[in-house]
Image 1 (cartoon, rainbow, N blue to C red):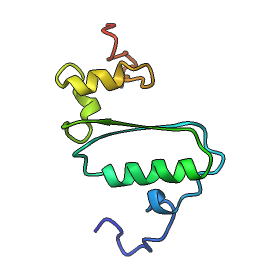
Image 2 (image 1 turned 30 degrees about the vertical axis):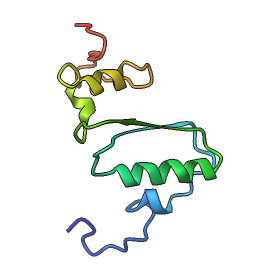
Image 3 (image 1 turned 135 degrees about the horizontal axis):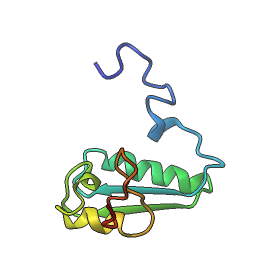
Length: 101
């Protein structure tokens, strides 16, 4: 269903496995330690390092997938967004991480 008959070796389908990260700007990857995509995050971080890219793999313990959407509800979400590396903006352009209205 996900691949819809496409070749799984395509870079856009499996970037954690296949993408050439050479020349990428610094990368920040954030995931939970029980994240469904944790393996992809750690694999991408390792591949970025091999390609000479500065990478930060920031893991938050015991929070759910897309925990960043729960600012104000989950401690890990506020910490991740409050570290100055993420800008969380609503569709209306309002900054959600800093309490502005």
